[in-house]
Image (cartoon, rainbow, N blue to C red; front, side, top):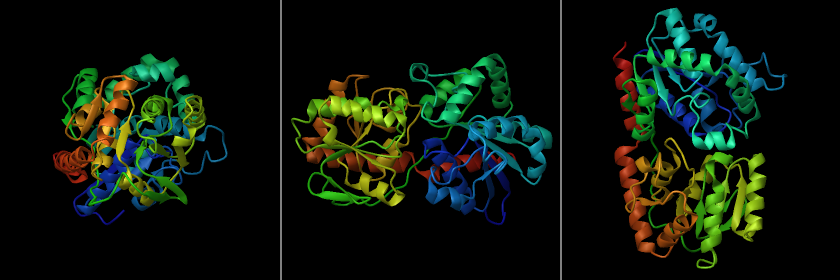
Length: 409
């Protein structure tokens, strides 16, 4: 990415085929380290520059281990992931100049482990969660693993038959690492218990913007040629069943009579699950109030955050979740469940509200409390901005990462 000054680092991630939190973390790590004078190479088994943060992936220079071999084959992303994992020791020859390897989530961790062992170099790990193939959450067991990504779902079904072997290889690749960095204290405690080793709390971050005197209750905003009237709620997760958008759609149905002009705006690429969400809103008679607006640019996403009244985070068992931090960077309060990751990113009653899990009635009431009190909304938004900046900046994240890296060079 740029000429090395301090040392050379290779970061391996599981894949870049959608715009998710794990992908954003790796990209911000690479950008931050380069700014500080490190030489950084980012690789993954599979990369789609059109679907995963197009504005950032190309700039970082993310590459695949096997860029063209599987292009014309079905399930090519799954095949690339398998090939990269099996052949990782032989790929090490291309990374002989690297000083430290960083494995970000499986199989990035396994690939880093293999190359580090072959080359006798140090490696570190960054985990957003334990390996979900062998340690699924309740929501994963209920809805399946990455059901909207056919290649990943195929892998899940295939690898379930190798569960005993995977548990051992996963544990080996994690226990041998020099440092194990984790995304926040909630998931950090879970990871420490699963793998029985010390972790370094390295929460993800956010960028910060001037939110000023934007009126989030009146007027409208144009996004990708679509006029969106205010006030509106916002969700920015992937359209996956595990994210449980239906909770917010149901909550909107409960409170829409009290805030007649209220809408829910949902950007992001459509998936097979989107159709089910549209059907759910239609069954509740609020299909015109739920706006699925499709994929948006980073610029339009910023506009959506800046003008929204309340950010909603309905995922019931999220390991961390970048959404509340991104909203906080725009001075927007969040309503989420009082469980899992949001208990780290949202301070109940201060930067937003944490509703009783999983009471749609309480979730809706928390939204209504914010909407009915503009002064409270603005106060919470300012508190969210301040808390996010103090505790969850990307600068702080890279500070911790760099501190760990320098221990081994």
